[in-house]
Amino acid sequence: MLVRGRGRFAMTEYIVIVTTVTRAEDAERIARLLLEKRLAACAQVLAPMTSWYWWQGKIESAGEHCCLLKSRRELFAEVEAAIRSVHPYEVPEIIALPVVAGSSDYLGWLGAELSGEG
Image (tube, rainbow, N blue to C red; front, side):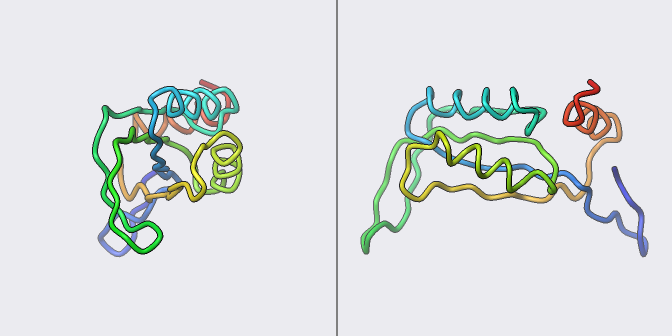
């Protein structure tokens, strides 16, 4: 939930995990796995995009699907392990972005779903 401190809102306990894969089916598999394990309360698979990146000394590009997963910071290690268990990449992007603020209704729902009380 939101915490007020020094005139600002402090970070919440929630995170958004980002991972990318080539195929929509892989993104959907990751989304379903994390939802079934209650490691994520919500998963969004974004439409195809083009990623540009350095790989083995040269610039590459690839069509990918982005998967955004809403979770709690304390669950990150489990989320990462679950993603790695089904991710097809040698070096998958698995990063967590902090949720610094959010509507109390949404954050309440997120907490309830992650605890299995939703």
